[in-house]
Image (cartoon, rainbow, N blue to C red; front, side, top):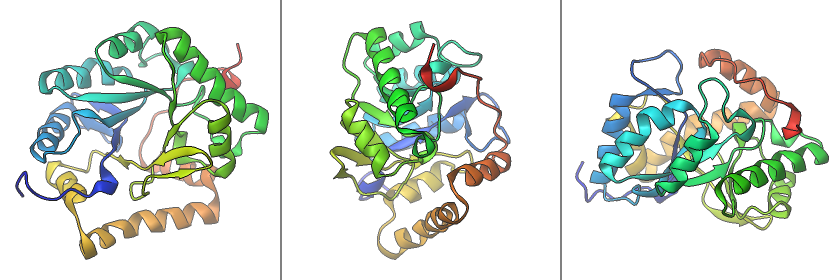
Length: 258
């Protein structure tokens, strides 16, 4: 594969969660070495990943301690989606660290207040999750926050309408094959979630696949989406959480209320 290989434009955004020094059984923990390999490959593909095409969800401290030095060395800028009630919690970035990322040229977006299933929130709770997190980040950074990443990928038209009314213009989801489009007044953008099983060759394959190869790669995700419809978001993620060996998230106040 050369740097002239045509990219799959539907997969121009990718997202990471946690970075580790060692390998981990948690599928969303990518090693620092593999992350560096990914970043080098992305630059070789001649894509625009140096300009905020890489994203990080949740605000884990490893994004600051391990990923940031790599990005600085390679000239990569990212979007960090922050779960605001988790700032300063154990293993999460502090407000000062989030401000530092912003000062260094990275973008900051909301990942809600408490990482709730937004599609299951009442109208009041949904409004609070979206607006309170945005306002807290705006107060922290002194700039407008108009971008949000949906926790668990749990969204519907009601969630998108609420994003519009609370001041967002771009909504990122965890659907890797979703073509960017305006829905309910906001730009909805899909992303590929990176797992630790995706070595550099696998990721390159996903980003450059075309035609029938791409269609085959889409099948597992379509099957997952069908399962979510059958058993519901919350049950699906409860099962997936156990399968992925994920640790429990920090305890937070309900819906951003203090």
